[in-house]
Picture (cartoon, rainbow, N blue to C red):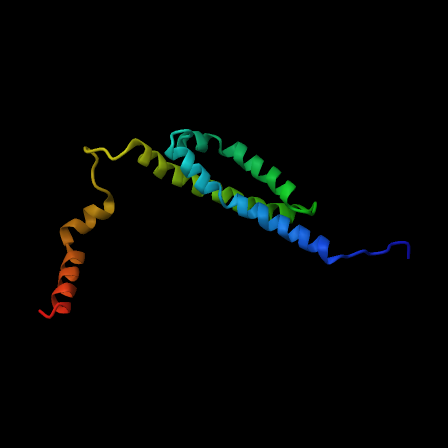
Length: 135
């Protein structure tokens, strides 16, 4: 009888907008890591060694982002941050390769090594163009 609930739609909208904004910022982690590796500022090896600290920082950020104190919501926010960090490490490898440039002595990738002898795609592309042009 001494508690007066003051539930307002503005406070609910404020919490949801804040949560959506910060999760949108979090989803930029792979792009930021790719860009930093592309410019040679970080390496995938450094990011992999920094993984333990990144997990702790993910939980700290999740504690700040979530409006409640329960650990379930914190884990629900921290797990995507950790997954996005791992995706960022993979993209950082790609960015590092692009930073180094193509090496002329490099072997072709596994996909090219498999499909090069087959020439299946080239045959079907020629076949499509031949019959499309009227033969």
